[in-house]
Picture 1 (cartoon, rainbow, N blue to C red):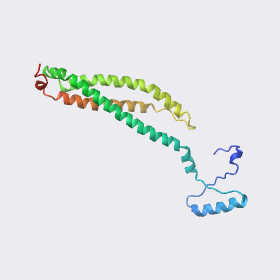
Picture 2: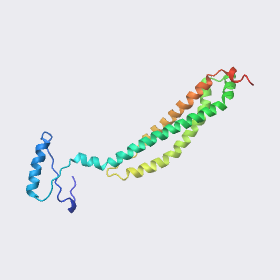
Picture 3: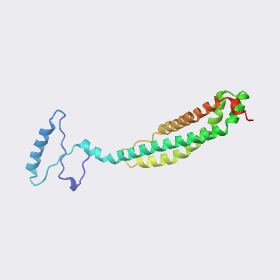
Picture 4: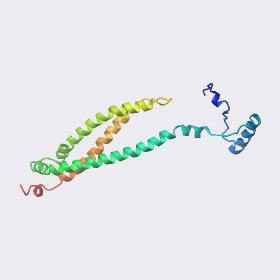
Length: 188
């Protein structure tokens, strides 16, 4: 507990009650005692946990807004990646068919197409980590109780993004690799 000299709060009294005590009767008794000492003041009571919750309501609101916008950004990014991989695979269907005819396995085709996307996602992740670390470190420094930056969180985020990219591009690549090369190359 910390005691400070602050005249603005001289009329504030903190009371700790036992957990088995009835709050309604304790409030009435405290009100009588308070009014006997300060007859011209109005007694109002607040619980410490609700007071602490009020301190962090702004952070909870920011968290909710950021969660929604991050979810929306991830959805838009996934749709963009879906469209880009569809476009790329549509352009490379003949190449995929020729590679299949020449004996490429399904894993080789999947690796060939996914490799480019994984490199791009890796570069974008490295570019995004620097401002994310800077802004999170700045935000965390505003709290009285400081926690260290959890670097494992960045690694998990990177792995999650890579896995999401592999799922989206891998599904498109798998469908393209399963197509019949004779149907794709019949015009050649």
